[in-house]
Amino acid sequence: MGTGRTGWAAGTTALAGLAVLGLLSAGCSTGGTGTRDEGPAGTQPVARVTPDINPSSTKEPTPRIDPVTLLKRDPVVSERVRTDLKPCSGSAYPVDTSYGTLTGGPSADVVVNVMTCGDSVGVGTYVYRSKDDGTYENVFAIEQPAVYGTIDRGDLVVTAQVYGKKDAVAYPSGEEVITYRWADHRFSEHDRVHNDFNRAVGDGEAGLPEPSEPAGN
Image (cartoon, rainbow, N blue to C red; front, side, top):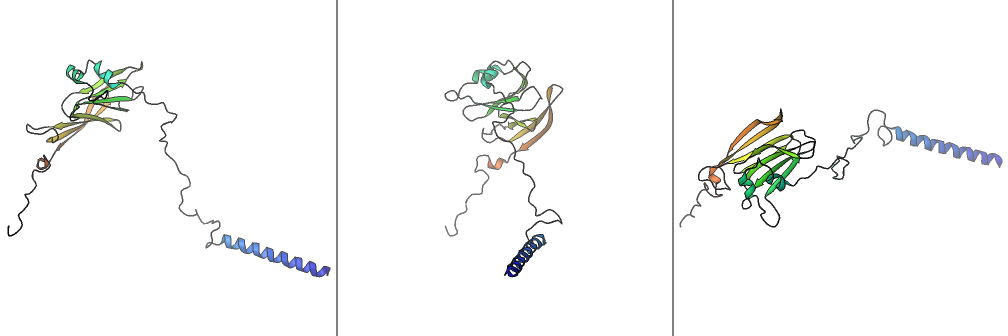
């Protein structure tokens, strides 16, 4: 009986060994799902980078200013603009403010656009550069109807609508798009684009064909 038990145990061990060998062989086969040694497996990315758009980043927050107070105290701003700068409703002034890098100052530059209350037409665009003592100086100003300035990848882009004698405020004849860059402590014109608008759609209906009458009427 001892011999029988020994033979049975040996047979069981041999079967287990064969099963393990079979699993290993299947795992190493190029048609299976095990490890591969002929190159990277699949096209899955090795690592993912998530951009940091969290406003609570460790970077210093951009200091905010009071644009209305800045404008009213700025002698570069014309008296007409300063006098007309009043709230449209409640305490809301017709002023847009943008922060960004234009001049490479100690902190963000500030672009301030002043508009009319009724139709939001720009009347002035101003750029303020921060100084080491925390104050701001006016380094750019343009005052004319329908003007608006923006920051575009380090450049100052000013758009001014062009009006003919009979143009309505909502339908200018064209526009000038001027790009300025900061160099040698001042802004200089870098590029200018003029766009002429289609006069046929000046009032939204002009230039469209009259509807034809049905046949027989």
